[in-house]
Length: 127
Image: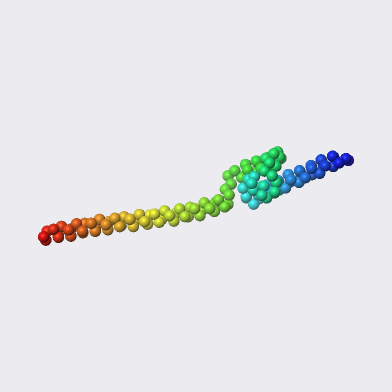
């Protein structure tokens, strides 16, 4: 075996290791119900973005995982949505309370205006 053949063999072995590492990361993400995305795979495996797009075997695994997770909602997003829904509910309750207070104050204001007008009329009659 000459140096070239040995080099090709080493490169082939490294390529297989990268593919296996990528596939394993994808499977782990699916098992953990973590949404499979290229940026997450890059950070988990240390492989390049181009590797995930150019390698047909890995790309096929990614596409399959994404189809499998099509309806899946990210857990963090779900938690944030719940928190936002609670905050919206609190704000709606606050708005309703303030609207009631505003109506009461408007009624009081009208009553005060009427009382003031009566007082002014009585003052004018007494002159």
